[in-house]
Length: 313
Ligand SMILES: [Zn+2]
Image 1 (cartoon, protein in one colour):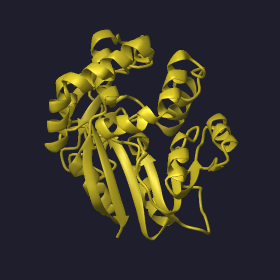
Image 2: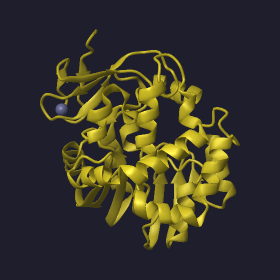
Image 3: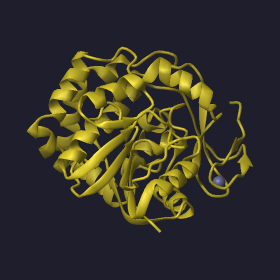
Image 4: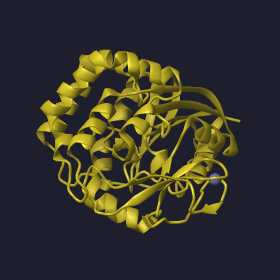
């Protein structure tokens, strides 16, 4: 295995040591090997080699957003479920990793709001919700629902009226410079403003159990992999104080790790991840049978998803 030196985005140390796993993309079939490095100095884990922003933009364009996955059976069923009353009950059992249950008042910005699914929940729960979305087609769909959606990058975005809440729901781990991202959010927030973050926990028991097949390595799109400790440290450095940090383990993520373990082949897309009957039956089985393990994992700091509320300090 060729080891790629990587520069830590937290402490700046350049090192080729600390490789945890050699991994490849288990979703879309991008045929390249990457490594997961843990910085020997501060412990932050990163993908190596680090893709450039330009490479990432091309990959997102090709594989990620709206590349034909509209009105498929899977997306239609998912949309139907999320708009139903069942979804609210489900969140109570499965855990709310996208802040869809939180209520409050004030101005909220959802970074990477996509088609505005989250915006509908936030607005319905008392906030004046706006979004940032670079994908113009997704932004158009959200605007069609009546939301203010800006097509700007976070760095290029400024506003006279600051926000009370900024949401980063499964966004921070995609950033080539998460520290900078948090500093820009700091700038957009009111004095008592909060940032709500959810992201995968690289130290979850599922990352150990599934190894290179853990669905949340998600290389090369996930470039930083946070643990509770490294996320806390980054927040502190970016002038935020953690008000609450908890863990959840969505059954969907476990189902996806199982499917990747069973079916993923290097260089081939895993179509089973988008099979509605397979995913739905696995989710129900996992929630029904594995719930004590998921619950214990969450309590012992080894859940699959970190859910954080942090306040500007
Ligand atoms: Zn470091």
